[in-house]
Every structure is written in structure tokens, then in C-alpha cells.
Image (cartoon, rainbow, N blue to C red; front, side):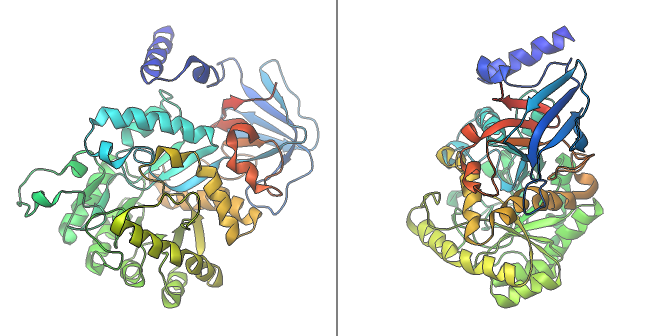
Length: 449
């Protein structure tokens, strides 16, 4: 046991974490229980917080919730939460753990170890912003996830998609023009080598690439179904993949008990994916009314992002800026259609290649109040996003219920200095306002003295 602890300390030091950060981390093995006393509760579903309650955490689960006093013992850590609100940990349904904070120039030129260390540091930052779970929507996150689960590094739970699967010239084709024409048995591109994206053309290749990501540990599969803002070769209006190719991906994923999600903005791209059996549409900013109606009929999910031209937009350059403006212009219509047709809407940030933007993760969530009430926004980022995560079925890497505060649920919790239902801007400043951050029953931050 002592040898294992020394090894963990060496690894954490090597990753560059400060001694202070490490001191805030997991509780000692002697502490068996945590008791939150006199907390108001936002349970992840309700429109308002409760009257003062007591919540007992035993191991990694919520053991008891009661208005009455809950007995404690010598191993119970007691946290007085008077005038504070206990809520579920936040969930980002469209995150890029390996690429959010790494400039694209470094991503394509650095050694793999460089961006793994960078991602490990950002993973801890993500957790300290109150995001205890993320759905990773492309990138080589498998090693990072394993390191977090083994408590070698600190970070959120990760539902990994692995490499985004793209057609030639699609949103996930990161090759240089001098790599074209490609030979049938040629070497892998840089993007494929690092696991950022893989190229597959035709149903057979798509099936193979899906199976490879599932073999590596993907909890869901992501395909590029249309043009993107950050990609080099595909205008926004370009539709990618045929219905047969989507169906091949869906069949391969369903054989593993999970699902396919696609990057798509336009009606043509979305509808082709839906006809191919895809269950989740990422973005959909340019969808029209018939497309929204089709999504409703097929009970498909919208994984939406608040792409608007505000202080969090990270303006692009040249043609990418033109594409960005086109997408931003459609965001308002997309969410209005989602509400009109009562679509199941998840929320995520989709931050890419910008270390300065990642600190705004919670602030970006608050901008969803342009379309939804604060209780609706917080429900979306907790219980609704957890419902989306559950689509992975037995491929879900974590057993247990998330996104809610109820007896038996996993203890991923935030103690907030105030009521976020009344003042959602509290979420935008996690450093000051998240007094306690708990994941899987372990306290990673505690400012209550």
C-alpha cells in the first residue's frame, strides 16, 4: 500500500500539479461518511430548492436524505451547509478533453505526450469548474479516462467517443493537401495517428472504424455528417455520408448496445442521418421546421450549444469566420424549433483549441437563459444530460444514477454559496461560489471551515 501511494505521488508530481492542489484532493481512507447538514437542495429536476435538509454520503452514493437529524460517527465528516444549496455535479454533453485547451497547431505537431500532459491539467481544471462528468465528442481520451478513473490524475468522469469518423474531405479529415491522392495501402495521417479522427469511405470501412473505436473503449460513436466551421475543406452546406453508411455505423454500434451521434448543421445532413438510424444530432443550428418535426417523430436528441456572437464566441478568421457567423445566425431559430416540437435537448460547450475559453465553461451554460429559464438550464446540465449519457447502456463506463440528488444516486455534488435557481450567474464563477466539489463520494474541494 505504501509503495502504491509513493508511486501515485511521483506521477502527480511529474504531471506538474502543485502540492496545494494535491492536498485538496481525495479524503483520507479513515473517513467513511460525509454529512451535509442544513442544506437546501436542487435535486436536478425541480423548479425550486427544498427547505433545509440533511444529506448523508456513504462510500460513493447518497445514503440518506432527511429533514431530521442524521446520526454521525467518529468517521463522519460533517459539512455545515446553512444558507447554501446542494446540487448535482454539472455535465457537459459536448466536450473535447484532449483538444479543448490545446492550440490546433500544437495538436498537429507536438509529441503525443505533450498534449496528454496538457489534457491532464485541463481535466483537473474542468473538475474544479464543477463539471463532474463530460461526454467527450472526439479525441484520443482513452488513456486520460483510465488515469482519472485510477485516481492518477484528477478530472471528471468521461464518456469517450474516440476518434470522430469522417469521409474523405469531411469534417474529420485533417490531412494536408499534399497527402492527396492517397494510396489504398498508404500510411495513416497525423490526425489518425493521434486518434483525433479517422477516414472511412463506404459502409464496409465505416463498419470497421466503428468497431475499432468500440474495441478501444468508446461509449458512443461520433460521425461527421456535414460541413464544419473549424475544418479545412468542407463548406457548411456540404452533406457527408449516405444513408447506407450511417446505417452501417448504427448497426455496428447497436450490436455493442450503444448509439451513434453526428456532427450536422443543415437539414440535408440531419435528415440523412436520421433516416440512417442516428439517435443524437450535435449542433443542428441550421435546421428548418420539417427537420425539427422529423427529429420529434423519430424521438432523436438534439445536443445543442449556445453558439452566438458574444464574448465567448472565439472569432475565427477568413472563411472559417464566415462559416462561424452562418452557424451563429441559426442558433436562435434552432432552439425555438426545439421548444416548439418538444425535442429532447442536451447541452454542451464544444470548446476547441483555446485554453482561454475553457475557463468560461460555466459562464457559457448561463447563456442558455436566452431560451430557457434558469431551472430548465440547470436541469438540462444535470438530470437531462445524465439521461443522454445513459443511452450508452452497458457501454457506459460508470454504473449508477447521475445528475440527481436522491437516495441511491452517485455522489457527484456541488455545494453552492447561494441559490443558482435565483441567480444562475453563480455558476459562472466556480472558484468563489462552489464551496464543495465532490465526485464519486470523494471531496476534491472544500472551502467550508
